[in-house]
Length: 342
Ligand code: F6P
Image: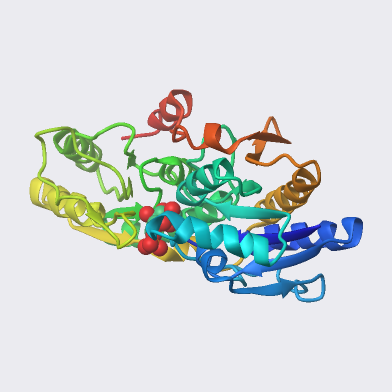
């Protein structure tokens, strides 16, 4: 078979490991010809690609980013985008496309499957917000990076008796914040699923600091929101692809904490550090499993389906079902995390 691979949306540790898994099994086991489209769906629209071979994939397992490039461009952004994508599939005699992406890339893939393009999906995102799959690759790496940062912030916070606010990524969900907050022993964590009351946050910090010389770590998910009417926040901003541009809530929270409590407060916004660099061992293994399972799905003609992790096994689900709803932090995990708040 001739199989095209693309990576769409924000980059994520483990993308190259997925591609390597596909190429290894595709070339060695099935004798496939594999190509990588440049910059996600943009390469399919423009017919831009490069060959992917076992040889080319050497050394890429631990490498962050994606060797074939990524973008948020989708065929539906152009009047003739879908038609051009279909033309590329026809001209290059592509039997299937494996789309490795997050919510945006996968939703588009589900639509294109309905239009007749044979697609198999692989869920990617540090945010871990894709439905049905228990985990997306990249999440474990992001949590490790955020946890290490929190560990480091603890010692400087303690030396100065300060409050440290750490803003982490996650878009509309608080998986990274909840996990890194629990792993790093945060004083409190604010996530989008449960709007916060800044008065309550400040009161709990005050109680803790009044007891003696304490430093505090407040983890804030970039999508965290105050309870309605409690704090003014800036209106949402979007990038040129209509993708929400979050970030900055940490500054507001830090400013309010210092203003209301009088305790010296600093903010660290971890930003893209969380998704750069080498994937963890866990993400390398999950990515490899997803890659191998994706090329197997192609050979079973399981088009319109996505590989997913369930009870530690790789299963297949409809892409459209997986993107129907975001996966939120479970109330049970949140209740456990809350046990450790100030
Ligand atoms: O979805 C992954 C993610 O890293 C989010 O956590 C974050 O909000 C967004 O992408 C940032 O996107 P960009 O790279 O366009 O700034």
